[in-house]
Image (cartoon, rainbow, N blue to C red; front, side):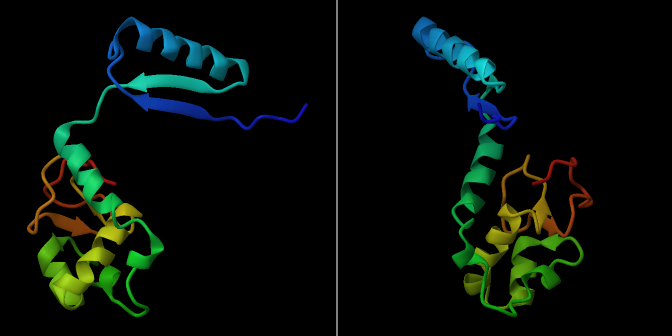
Length: 137
């Protein structure tokens, strides 16, 4: 019998969401996962702000948004600075913002995602961005 890789499955829903039928289904999935060595758990929904902050940059995760070769997106954020300021330093903000969001999604840039992502949100090369709560990508 082939070895099953160690994995886990996670669903985002309140533990009691969906009523008895959903709870029964979750228990069945948890048992099936346990049978093959996986873990299964239901997590509470994300905070609305965090969910919105993840949804926006997620639209730019595809490699086509990485920007043209030589685009200095990362170099524009070698120190923490406002999103729009860094985008402007890298070029025309309209052309650069997709690459900035792509870099944010892929963890090349980080930001405090517990507050709404706006043009003045500080982005930096790592999650030690001054003024943040330490929540990063």
